[in-house]
Image 1 (cartoon, helix red, strand yellow):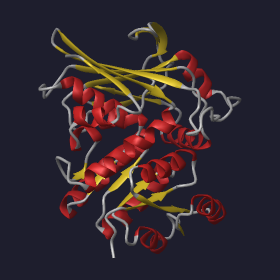
Image 2 (cartoon, rainbow, N blue to C red; image 1 turned 180 degrees about the vertical axis):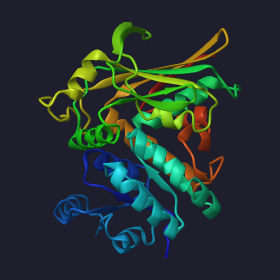
Image 3 (tube, rainbow, N blue to C red; image 1 turned 60 degrees about the horizontal axis):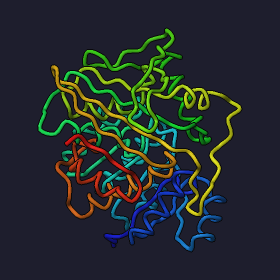
Image 4 (tube, rainbow, N blue to C red; image 1 turned 90 degrees about the horizontal axis):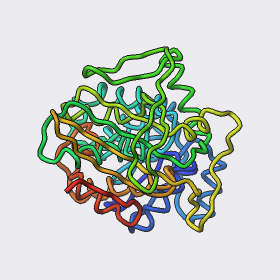
Length: 342
């Protein structure tokens, strides 16, 4: 029998998965721990007192058992080029919503291309990239758009104090680079292009107190999939502060280290979004701590809204399309400080 408060977390023992499990419990939902590593699952189950179900993307029956009785599934296990499709297939078989935290551009594009029709026909909500990259930028851009249905450009600038990547981030990045043949993705003229030259470096005018900072231009993230999936914007560009880009690309940068009781690192962020139409510019910004930790309230808020019927569509949809963007951002206020143009 399906429980309306039970959510399977695939990849529950990973860095982001642990934050998601903790946030589900804070919201009164019951996580079911799942993943392929039996040892790590058992350790987390003992530590948390939660149930665990070993599952592998190579074994559809094990995924079916992992999702049995659950009302939703959150996929936190990368690389999503490998895990997203099998877990979505299992969610469709179970008839339950699927949310993931994928930052991989190609994996997210695959989800839209492969499952849009099937998920819509099944009446199932599938939300890829419901995370710091992809989800938050899309919500901010959608909120900044207001009543606009189209714009000329969207710019998402990431002001990270630093970026100590997890092992999962490194693996996902390697998979994406391999799929691109070492190139980099750019969304221009309404489509993804791949380039092999060096990205530009420029100054971005972040709002105070951060102020102008050097950023890597065309440091492309999942926003180039989520935003154009529902907003008519032919140019979507993302930027990253030079220091953070340097750290995430260095093999010597250590993994994140906890500095508080919630397990968050000292990393802070400012996401500055600008949308332009003609001569008019609108902005939205979000500030917070730890990009991995803040992914948990994003993903869990999404599941809570889906389970309580606060959605605008079915099928594969990005955060800004399926949810009320300003309302969603307001609900994140304990975790993120949001500033919107009046």
